[in-house]
Length: 125
Image 1: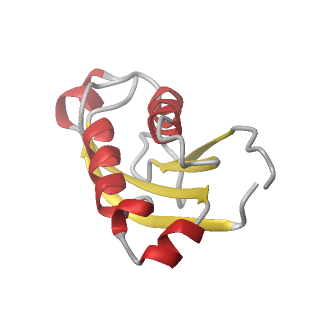
Image 2 (image 1 turned 135 degrees about the vertical axis):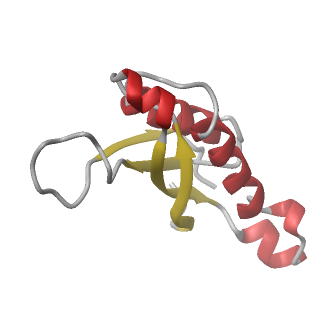
């Protein structure tokens, strides 16, 4: 697997995910971190954005999913994010962290995070 990676950290998105009716109705802020592994060699050579993963478009895709269809579980959302990102064949692996800092927990806490990763076998060169 390539050691080149792109990291998108702290993307804040308003969504309507949760098992409680008020979560779906009122929504809340979610925060997403994405790390994806790819190969920068073509982009480094060409200096052309079309030869790499456009992190602005990556952010747009993440926002579309998190702000879209309400889900009961953030585990579902984080899995959808990882599968979407792995749809680009240039992505060798991805780790997605979905934070739910305002989760309805009746205790003092800093954050709730669910984390998933995906990986494909990439032929060695």
